[in-house]
Length: 237
Image 1 (spheres, rainbow, N blue to C red):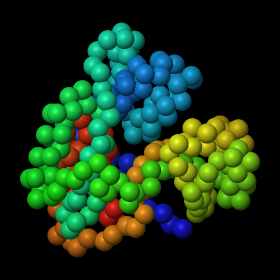
Image 2: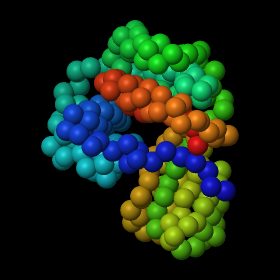
Image 3: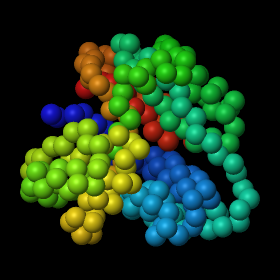
Image 4: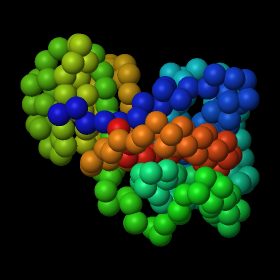
């Protein structure tokens, strides 16, 4: 069905400063996952998935190891998830996911990005109801029907499945993420996922004009420069 999602690699860091921010975001995510779910990736599926993504995005091993070592102490920062919603250039819908140890600071920083870009920050739920919170798994396989059958046998709620160029893309509700990954591995052995993420996918992607697209790109750059911001989603397609 050609569902649109945003591959993180589209915004891969191109400068040393941008790379440092990418490393910092992954380090924070790894630290939070290791601290809350255990240090061993074999027993902490969330941590294992984050590490796999970090490696695909060329995060150095020492950054990953340092984040896990930091979680061993048991003290340190206490991060929590913060999510902000609003309307960007041209009225497009935007969701900003953060990990923060100071929600008041983070809200102020995010709100300032909206204000400087002449955009409007909204209330919780103001735009997220127009997105599907989905797990996305992309891997090499030639038989879409065989993958669907394996997932159905494992009682996975499959939202959508696509096959193109020897790759199968599976969409499931975010709550089915680990169950779906396990079902695929059980059925097809060790799988190297090209995409292994949970995202907000717009139900109805909307176009923007050229000037509005430039404004959106600048707005996203401004948000992603913030240390607390982990991901930015929008409905522009």
